[in-house]
Length: 317
Image (cartoon, rainbow, N blue to C red; front, side, top):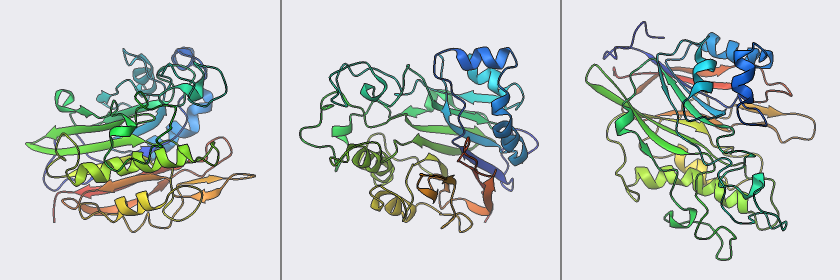
């Protein structure tokens, strides 16, 4: 949207989030495929990003490596000048048999579902400078330590289970003496469990972390001034499984604008035996920002049920 990295008062900035699958089943495979030109399956998702042309993009299912080599290879055709990613909780061992099947070290036993550390994490791509030294990572917060936690007293992860299935970040974008913070996350789906509803309760709490932060119940203090909350909450305000009160409470928070163009509109559609159309991904500006436009890019398909979700904002009144 903007022509350069300078963030001027009247600039309109496009913030977007996308839960496309930039991931493979084994470590290093996505990087290998990208370098060998064998990642044609990613073409529709990359085209959706180019078509949307966001200034700031959060990807919520992209493989992580410490050198960001995979992210840089993915960005080669996108051209974002600033990249940011932290090691996610996906695939990180807990040392426990979390799913109770008598085995340890499997995908469901990790801090967040994953067969290897870094599988399907998050990445922020930006045309605005990222203040990496001031970014705050809340991904190590134990689930039991969230105020008002719904973790069960007999949960198998007590003492070790982190709240974030992927991550929770506060990342400042700074230019022209102004700052916009990106609040980024990707929550576990509230399904794939039993009557104990462990994933449903964890999903609720991953979303509730933001309400706790904005209401001053977590350290550090909530970011002052403008922010945009981006990510895949994996929860619709009304439909599908899950404890819907958490996302409804967040959408109604006094510091958040919920774009009218996004309300009651699906961001994903699971066909066949899936839950159907649901709103699960969100681009939510703070009240310090003025919404100029909002929408979606991409048509859901069996291979890619999610749409890219974007919002245009400005500092101007």
